[in-house]
Length: 487
Picture: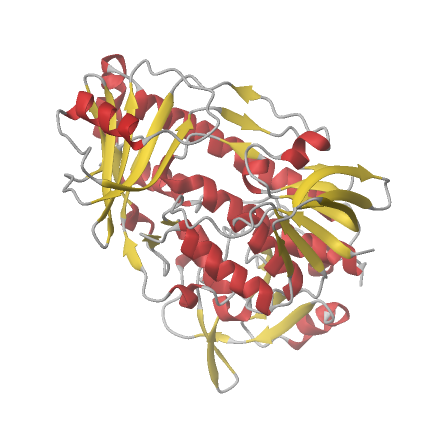
């Protein structure tokens, strides 16, 4: 074996997965077709759920001082994310090139073998291992691993080679995007519907602006490269009457509203993560953030199976949990696509939604959806409100030291958090000490409402609550056995 895991693709999803596997001591090779990072901005920030996940691995600080925001939108209709509360706001203005730089640095520090300029060609899954054929310049070679993960984007070569179905809807329209400098552009952060289509504009800092144009009736084009900036400027002028042709174009791209999702996220020893598993209109930056969350879900599970502490059936929960999230993502981005790209016939729907958003329950529902905060996994039955949800950030005193639930997750292990110093509880979990940390602590400061009267919680390495007392119908050893394997 050349490695336990081969990851194809060094975008955010592939790099997060590489870091998660290395954090668990799994040897991994990442192969990336591009010889160097593109430097393109693409995704521009993190949803609330992603900032939480990055912080629980100590990564958020590596981005420096982040510009946070409580402003969001659903289909171009303004949405106040502050209604969700919590310790982690959304972050904006972080170009994807910066995100990839930080994630690659983390993965390399942990020992990931990242090989650029190597193109995946084909694979063979024997049932016991996977062999990938790789081209490096004029030379071809093979790599063999126990598992191979496709993180190579929406046009995934791995997905096609492994025979995954990728059903969905074809693109009906094309949108053009450009990051420009040298001209002033009036902000239209949530987009503006005009007679001929839709325009969006937002400042990126340092004199840079992102503009997006979607001309109504513009059919998708089969392109072999990005559009010219002249195309973007022409459509912008037709829709707005303003001339931006004198700007310097830093990056130009095109995208569509095609919507597809793989029928399965695992096939034998090949798995999909990120855009290789789902594509959609990039509404609100949910694509990159969902991709990162896919890999945070998969990493610890794949590591446990490779260590032999958990059965391969644990990988089935990767599909069941993340496929459902992907399905909901596609539903909400399709709804947003209608609102953003529709003409006058959609205006009554925009008006009704605008009337509903002042109601806190409606605003909270949509804000949670676009922020990833509404995700809840099936972790067992019971009445505790946090079962299957991510534990809110909790300040703690452990012994004489101050810490937090977020900091306890930094090593990437499970955590049994005993909030009432219960030795009997800790004895029941002692046989799993090789894979979870047993921590006795007391809340320091405000306690989230859902944790009041809670005596203990079992956290998966991704921060989701697998068991809580009181309120779980499953016994603690049952939950430990399910998520961390037999003792």
